[in-house]
Length: 239
Length: 168
Image 1 (cartoon, each protein chain N blue to C red):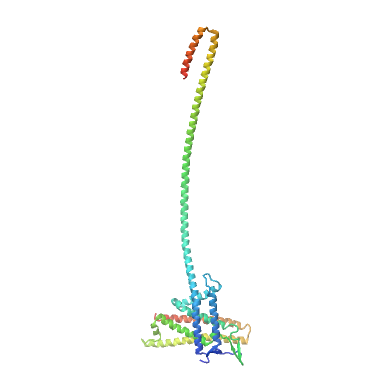
Image 2: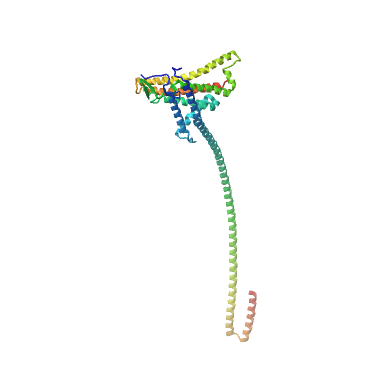
């Protein structure tokens, strides 16, 4: 039976900072994204080649998609939203690669994989959720101004005051829901794949692998889309 | 929290990691790609606008060309008509000149004929006179006396003188 751990395994400790396999995969994902970006955008031309066409298709498609949600604010939000989508989808799919979770080393009886899906670690998903919710508040204040605080602290009316408290709870719960939704889906998928591969190693895991590819895409889309919607709600406060 | 594997240092590291990704991708990916898309969109728009303008220009030029062609055709037709008229007039002139020339040549011929005839008549008269003189001489020598001869000769000389005056 494969070893299933809810938390990422610590590999080393550097200057008091634990290096987990999920953190290692995060760096790998960052490296892949930056490398692909540098390779495809170093020589942009008006008449694009294959690589440039694909990158333009992805970036242009995401831009139009998020523009349909956020409207005129798209220019401000796009770097965050597109990065959320690209980072999450890359992390989800890298977690499905052969070797991730299976190559590692033994500490006696215990097996420690060298790499673990970055989004199958709550630290990563929580970090993304915190950045997203922080960005929602930041853009809310930036666009609406100080009046945005009336969303949470409103002393004009007892009902608004209570609503403000509910809004605060809602914002905190957004962090939790963002983080656990993504973590839950990806971690569950990895557990499912590990169990299927353990029970029937050949052919049978393939449909589940395909499903996990789809889940990885959907979760990236849901995370970035919800952030876009919440951003839109925040900048529309008081309108 | 510990069971879930949440550690503040790892959380902070992931926040930093994601921030780096946002910044790097914004600078290296989104900005250049979106500006390239915008540039291409502008160029396509400009190209389409230019095509529209050129098409309109082409239509105008076609109309102008057609107008010029029609005008040229009309002018050409007019020139041909004019040339025909001129040719007819010149033909008339040439014919008239030819008639005049022919008349002149005929007249000249007539004069020549008259002149030659007059010359011939003179020659004939002269020959006739000479023949008469010769016959008279022969007749006189055989029939008449010398006195008669003188009288006859004198008479004929007078007659000849008279004829000469008349012929002049």
